[in-house]
Image (cartoon, rainbow, N blue to C red; front, side, top):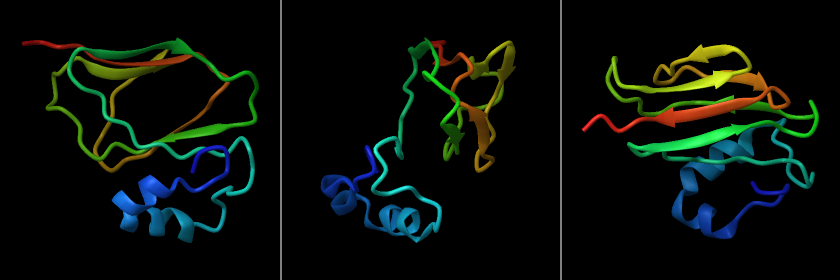
Length: 106
């Protein structure tokens, strides 16, 4: 869902994920601020520190695959540094500054 609209190309490529998302009663379709993203963070990538313009959004990160323990991969929200655990969701207020990284160690 981007800006409250189901994206046809995503729905075609990921029909099961789309069905699960649309089955959630609180998924905000039709609302311009509603977003659902699937992201891949490859080695060497980072998403620079940023924050939302207000506290209207609650973000949820649900990691499906996480590099092995000891890999320099994580997230900072405000002054707290976190690491992901596969299948464990992380919820936070989008108005707090946050960043993510997966430093390449090769």
